[in-house]
Length: 238
Ligand SMILES: Nc1ncnc2c1ncn2[C@@H]1O[C@H](COP(=O)(O)OP(=O)(O)OP(=O)(O)O)[C@@H](O)[C@H]1O
Ligand SMILES: [Mg+2]
Image (cartoon, rainbow, N blue to C red; front, top):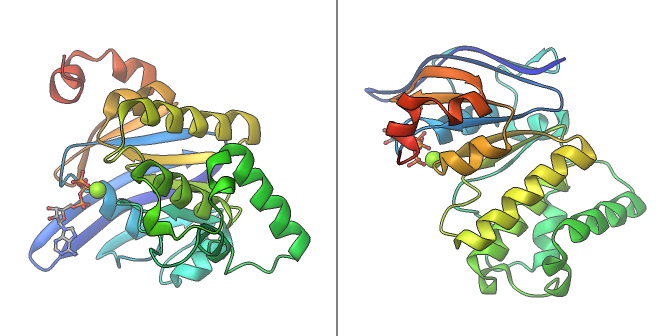
């Protein structure tokens, strides 16, 4: 089933056209990735989905409902949560406070929240050991775990991850991608992933879209794109 359908999405920042007639879809249970270099429009796409950027044209349909002019917190309530680029945790709040803020738009019982905290800790045990610690004192990788954990606290049906590998050591990047795969395989989480690390992203994704200066120039099965000669030259260092 199609969970998210985006048609002719166009975004302008003043005179700059950041996205031009972008079309894509995400089906339930998929990991879909956007690959593209700096400034291609990956973050703009993510922010449009979350209602943080107002498109100049096109439509975004999530679970059959048009997101149109819905406020961001309503979009989260509908089941679309984002771990933003650059992590953006609340630096002076504790790990626990950051996680609880992820659930702010939900009407959940204490018991439900406790259960969800527990499942975030199962995914990222390190966060449990650091519950009372201020977020700004976490390492970069730990902050990334916290940003993902916070998005999961919204109990989304579609998880948006914007550059989860940014500024993180290779070994930890592997771990985080492994966790994303685990979320998808074990919990059936649908994931839309934006990544400059195209190789890693294509390895875990089912399908991918290639963005170049605001336009989708290629799309398809992730395993096939991984072996695509043109893509290898442009994005995979081959
Ligand atoms: N608030 C803004 N005002 C003006 N221009 C913007 C704004 N945000 C983004 N842009 C421009 O829109 C284009 C797309 O940016 P975007 O952040 O979506 O790219 P990206 O693919 O996420 O890049 P990166 O890989 O570097 O994160 C860029 O040219 C950028 O300069
Ligand atoms: Mg970006």
